[in-house]
Length: 111
Image 1 (tube, rainbow, N blue to C red):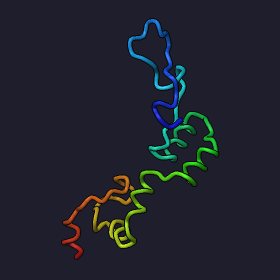
Image 2 (cartoon, rainbow, N blue to C red):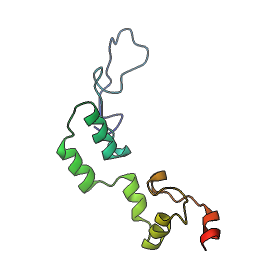
Image 3 (cartoon, one colour):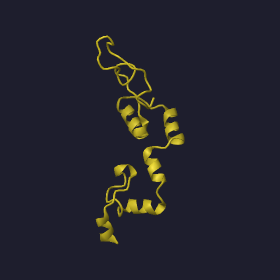
Image 4 (cartoon, rainbow, N blue to C red):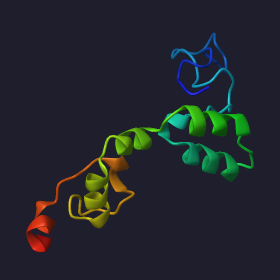
């Protein structure tokens, strides 16, 4: 699942535990959180020898937008070009999850 409530509370020894539940319903079980980006999930799984489920990749590429895709979809082609050239942001294109950060010194330099 892709939320903190996707699993029931898990315990190592429920009778001795003060804090209720682990992050998943079993010790050492990992959950995926594709809201942070599908590529990050896939890279993390591959680092531990797991193969991502193709159905998850299909859902998160075909039916669901990432945060980054949503941000970029609202920008006009002119804004995207200004951002990519560095006039608007001054930061590398992949930095900042798509948000525009004004670096107006560059506008003064390049007109």
